Length: 324
View 1 (cartoon, rainbow, N blue to C red):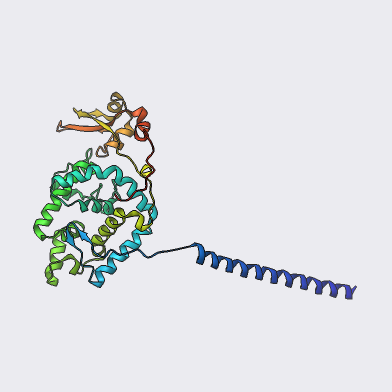
View 2 (cartoon, one colour):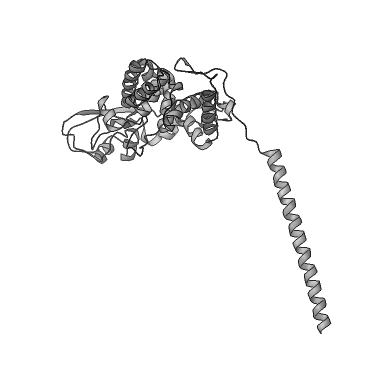
C-alpha cells in the first residue's frame, strides 16, 4: 500500500508539473502573439506639424522651438481625443453656419469660430466658474456686452446673441492689444492679467509671454482644432457628410406678456416644452413672469411631427468630409 501511495504521488507530481509546463508555454505563446499583434496591427502616429500656420491672418512663429512643440502637444491631445473631436465635427456643421456670418459682419476673423469649439465644444456648457454658453461668458462680462441674464432669461445660451456679444468683446480686446492672438489669450485670462504679464516681462507678443498653464495652451488649442478641422483626413478623421448634424429648420413666434405658462405656450404653438427649450435654451424657467413686459422672439420647429424626415430627406451624401 505504501509503494502504491508513493507511485501515485510521483505520478500526480509529474502530471502537475506537465500542466504547469503547458500553462507556462501557452502563456509565453500568448504573450508572444500579443506582441506580434501589436507590432503588426496597431499603429500610433505622430501628427504632422504644418510648415506654416496663421491665426486670424497673423503668422505663427513655428521657427521658435517652444512654439512648435506647444502646437505639437495640442495636435497630439486633440487628434487622439477621438470621441470629443468627432462630436465637434458633427456639431460644427450645424452651428458654424450661424456663427460665421455674425463674425464676418462684425469684422472678426473667421478663425475665432474655433475659439468657440475649445471653449464649450459647441454646447451650452456651464464651467466650474459659472461661465455659460457656447462662448463661456461669466455673468458680469455677459451683461457688460449686452446679454440679459436673470432668473428667467439667460441670453448667454442664445447662440446668435452670445456670438454678437463675443464679437464686441473681441473687438475691444483687439483695440487694446493690436493682436488677434493676444486678444484670444485675453479672452481666456482677462485683459488685465495679460496686460500685467506682458508689462512685467517687457514683451508684446502672446508667443513670447510666460503665462499660466491654461492660457499658455489656449491659442495653441485653437490652432490645433483649426488644423484638424480644416484637414480631417490628414489627422485620421474619416467622416461622411451624412454623419454630420444638419442645421434645424425653424420658424419664429413672438413670446410676450406677463406670467406666461411655457408648457401652455408650447402646446398652443404646436410643439412640446422640451422642443421649445431645446431650440431656445436661453429660457431658464417653465414660467415667464416678464415683469418688464418685454417681447421675445422664439424659434420653433417648422413641423414638430416630421422634423426627423425633414432633416434626413433627399439622397444620403456619403462623400468624405475634407474640411469644415
